[in-house]
Length: 210
Image (cartoon, rainbow, N blue to C red):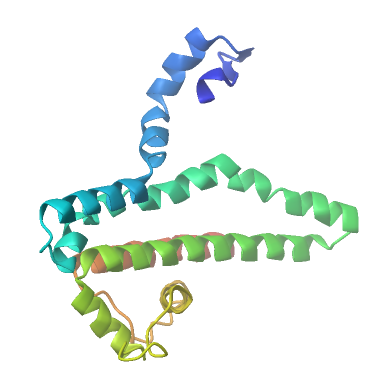
């Protein structure tokens, strides 16, 4: 579809596909192609094929075999944000503020809060994905046990909402520089991501205070 959307080329509007195609192919075509792949469908289909060829295939082998596929999933978040043009959407607060005559300080505060919440949400989802990808099911259950979900009964098994709250809580402790220490990186991938969160938190709050 992007091939048929007009662009600004050399300061002029252009809707000629012969001009649009080379520009798009050199810019975000590969990114859009990769993030458009139905990763979950490929994963399930490959799983059935592998188990059909080898019925004794263990669950742990399944998890290890498809970890590399799941790495593509976080890119979809970036694509959604780019498609929605998040920064332009935040300008809606200015329009709403002018219409309802909201004080500028309050409107700016609301915009900052929404931006931080979206950033923390994305960071939380990424943290849990990295944890799922870089740990075996046994290690994941050990971690959930330390968080009060031993998994011995249905009531003590963490559901997706509870897992999200754990990740959301951890990212907030990092961004707010509290660091209780009850959750920390368990392996190299998680530790590297935590280092990334440290600097991201410093940049975000440093920008807010500047």
